[in-house]
Image 1 (cartoon, rainbow, N blue to C red):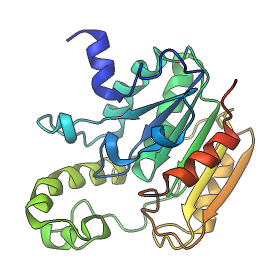
Image 2 (cartoon, rainbow, N blue to C red; image 1 turned 120 degrees about the vertical axis):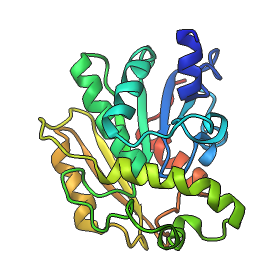
Image 3 (cartoon, helix red, strand yellow; image 1 turned 90 degrees about the vertical axis):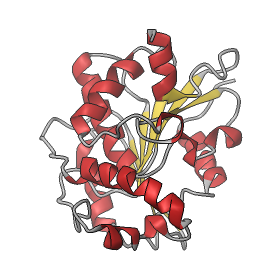
Image 4 (spheres, one colour; image 1 turned 135 degrees about the vertical axis):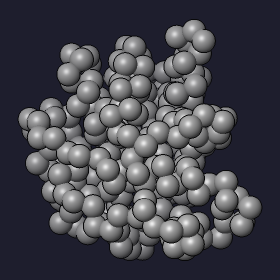
Length: 245
């Protein structure tokens, strides 16, 4: 597999707006989700190329074993993204995706490469805080009763269960290691009805940037508000990360 093939496997949408792109948005999905989870590209101008991270074990990479380690995920992603920082870029991550986006940024800093113009981090407590309610060791029946499986067909549940358990393992075995704050501005978001995180846990992200910090709660929205909120998110991203031209 060539370097281009590897990048295309991990970064869906890379090169899709080659002629018009002036900026890039890398999107990191939540636990159990794949690159197609958010349709942000359809809501953003052609000057923004959306590259959705496709981790192993889902969608077109279903046959590959899912990762269960943050360090594995970031070690694979960071060098790929470092090769595509020719344009100004930003990260958007939701829940698990927020942690991966944050750690990828720290890895990119260690590589000495260009950093994101802004991080949009959604639905996740600040990384130094302990996990409230670890679930990756729950029995299958109790894990199937969680919100991620609401309304999902039983046969599909059986297929998704190992993936969700792997993703939860990745998040819940993550160990935060202190480093200086990032120089990137942070926009932290969550649904106002998200019971997995509170405003204090969200506000604690402030200590992880030496630049600007914003906290935004989406009214009357649950944890997985991002499904179907693409237009609202695109408007916010466009304001904070404006396309040129």
